[in-house]
Length: 356
Image (tube, rainbow, N blue to C red; front, side, top):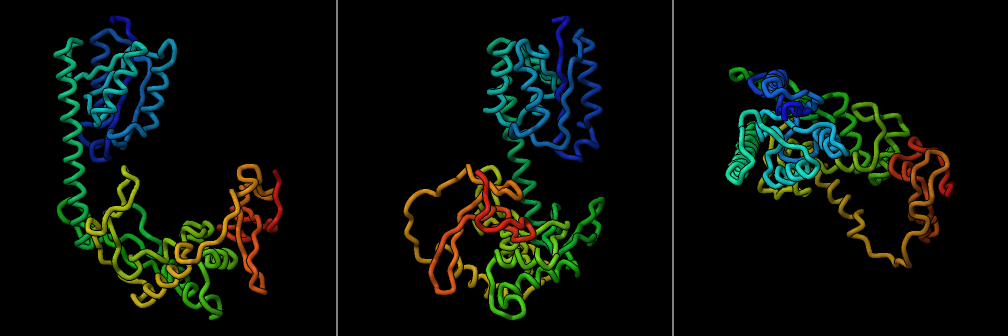
């Protein structure tokens, strides 16, 4: 093992860890010293700043695994500060350890030195199981604190909804608490979207989500970051309770890929931009326009040209749409998917123009 080639894997979960004893430079210093004392050559280094170890969605980690799976592998041993730097999920930890071992690559922790015998393997599993438990407990307590922070009216971070901006509210010890306040410029865009949904352009009557997105783009009203509006963005604005002063936190379970029950949501009070009456009227309108509430149409078969028909103007896929003529007769046509979501400003192609 005296001439082994080592790959260093360095990871921290949060910026706070990076500023303290688990910083990347400190890990590097300790790992390099360990390799030097064992006569190992440092052949590669993989750094993962501010990424959780509970899953394998880590770019540097995957690059390291790919290099370890080469034949022959790019290195003989992966060196980490502790097993928790490699993984905080026991099942996936064991999966990747065995995957490395099949290609002759060993995982070594400089703070948890164990043997290769059954006793060492048992101790490793106990350690990784405890790491997973500790990670889940930490996440649970952190979420509880963030929920309470939201209930007290303070912002937990991330990008605020359009129409609001983050401002410093007060300081508690070394922590600066922040809140949301109305952004006058973009709040007017939000109000306009609600007016279009209720009254339409120039008071001509309510219009749908797609028509609102088209109107905004055609009138050069951009999103906060200068982009074009799409159906999804408009729908999100029209259905977000934040705009009546009730911002919802902890609404989605990322790992399970689904919304959490309303009982688990934390309601953060913010300055309202529209009235409750306006919001509820829009919800009724959206519900009435929903395909789930419309009578079912007869379907004769699967959509033709799927995956082989593309817009000659912008290259996006063509999608099948339905329309109603002045005589009330329904018809179907193909249109560019970009145009279907963002209107003429997204793609100027005509309705039936495609290449395939």
